[in-house]
Amino acid sequence: MGLSQGQGDSDKKREDKFSCLPVTIRVIQSAIAASSDSGGDLKIYGEEPSMLALVAAAEDVQKQNTSVELMLNDGTGRFKARYFLTDPGMQKVVDEIQPGMYVSLFGNVRTAPTNHFAALGIRPVQSADEVSYHGIEVAHAFLKLRKAKRGDESAPAIAERVTQAAPPPQAAPPPQAAPPSQPAPAAAPSSKPAMSDAEMKAAILEFLAKESPNKGDQGVAFGDITKHLGSGAEDKIRACLVQIVDDGDAFNTIDDDHFSSL
Image 1 (cartoon, rainbow, N blue to C red):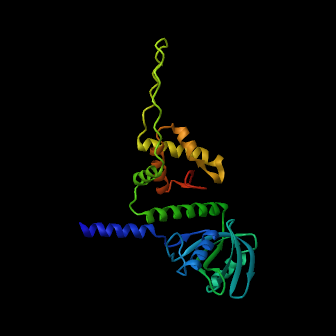
Image 2: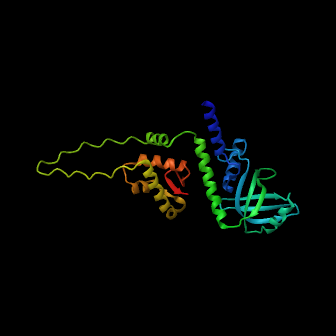
């Protein structure tokens, strides 16, 4: 039994790793800065990737007999890339690359002689969808690796920690007795029945899918979500949102209280 459990954990760790990790230029530059400060190896999302995938526009293209140098820009930053022609069959592909075109590359980051992306493969992007899909893959890889790094910490445990960190509510003042001549106030209408976890998750995902395009990069605020689902269940809603983010169905935008659907 112990051997089976250990083997299962090992398989799960292998699944959480990416053989070719999709990244943006900003992710690469942040990793270089972090490794320079710590003096350690280059790590992205806490991992040492074996291969990186990048999609960006080639602002400048300098072709030589055995290599090509590019200045890349993907909207998050600018970075130099270099590709050496080791396969004669790639000459035609390199000849197609012109300034202003989007290219897809895979390779590694090098810091000598200067910071650059050492491409092992390169080709022109065939469709604008590739650029959008790459951005989605970057977000999905980040969320999956962050979930794996958190280990077995469950959404209820995270929600409990958030709840304990919040200041305790102040006691309400005692109610005053109504004058005898006034009739007793009518009973408040009963609230709608509480949703199950599955119903709440489906309702949140539907609301995020509807509102995210209108909110742009800022995302949907936590207050808007609780207002839509009804107040009184903020802790349960937050726990459900944490689980949704961990599952990779949504992600945080400007802070931990703003969300957007994938």
